[in-house]
Amino acid sequence: MTTAIYPGSFDPVTMGHLDIIRRSARIFSHVYVAVAQNPHKKPDFSLEQRRDYLLKVTRDLDNVEVITIDGLLVEAAQKRNARIIIKGLRAMTDFEYEFQMALMNKKLGNDVETLFMATSTKYSFLSSSLVKEVARLGGCIDGLVPEEVREDILAQLRR
Image 1: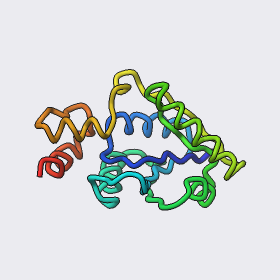
Image 2: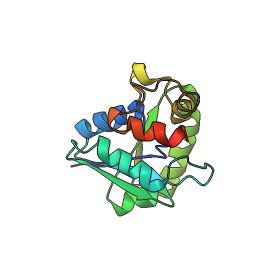
Image 3: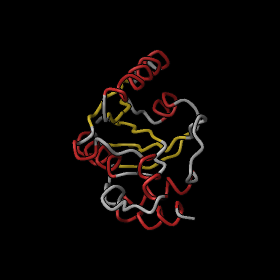
Image 4: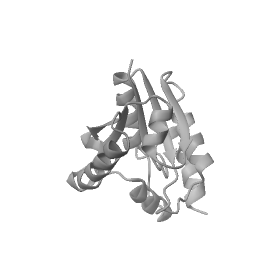
């Protein structure tokens, strides 16, 4: 049985994130979805909101557990016996950054591997930043974020 960890800021969760989570849940026996604090980003949603949104949209996935992490991803993975870090890729620009991170994670934890998963084509343009911009400008985010949390996301961003 293989346990994986899928980290992200999920600010907010998008259909692209959910696609990676669902596909990972079919491959691995257990998947931790790790809501991370990124010291280089100022999130629009609190850590608790991001965790709660993920709990809502993954409640039907018995082998998915939503956690929050602060600190090194490798240490969070090792603590939970997760031997795979899942990273979603939209484009080659994502790969350059994620490849560098994968090499650093391998140096920090030789027992943890990184798996790159290509985002489904229909979500390859999608990012949390783009969702936030569209929502703030009054645009439609239907199909971009999970329906269960869409109204909460709009309420937060249109304040």
